Length: 294
Image (cartoon, rainbow, N blue to C red; front, side):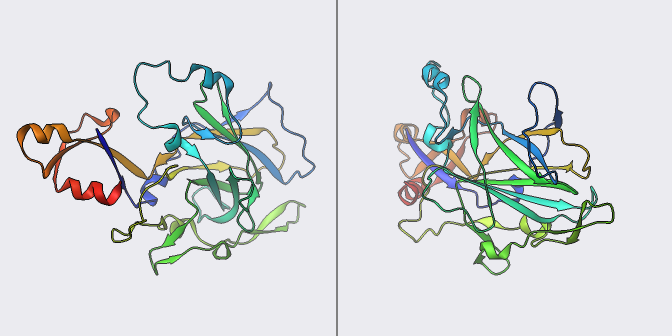
């Protein structure tokens, strides 16, 4: 069995699929971490994927690994998180124009520098089998916010001009003290949410020999249900969760099927198990695709 991975090259569609899980306020058992800065509120972000996070590991998950009869669709290398960037967008009203507010970044390699202006983010796996990963964000109060996440890919491209987006292209929202003594939005950030969602990760060039997919695979997700952080009197921790989706799709190539019928240039490609409700696809010249993507 051979494996071919195809890059989708589309970021906006994946990002906009988020925001469908419930947001709650945490009370009772898990108190808010004391923080002298009352202008921020804790938001516990849960990624509902079984991810391989460094340097935190789950002993219980390691002990039970390999006990299932079925082979996992995604390997640990494919699910690894080497980088994670969380982009926060804010607006004065729930249905207002959201602009860039702040950025959080996780880097598995301590030698990797964080992007300029980003706040360090720590990730931890939870549960005996490590099926979820959490990250604690301390977000500025005063606005409604949305979250966009990109994992294992730190390059964004603006399709308007084909140029790579740089940290300097992000200007955060600024706040000024209001009449009541609480921070108020002074200037909007750059870019706008509507512009950000048109950007995509770097696309592969078929003619470049070294331009191939490699693990860990790029993933993206979003929480687009507005989170209400407008109250300065409320310090209860907010909990929210969503899934990351890989930006590359894996297909299984069954070469034996073609050899049996003598159609060597014609290969049957099957989707992973969870998508087998759709018919198989027959692509001529699949051997060429494998040669380019292996």
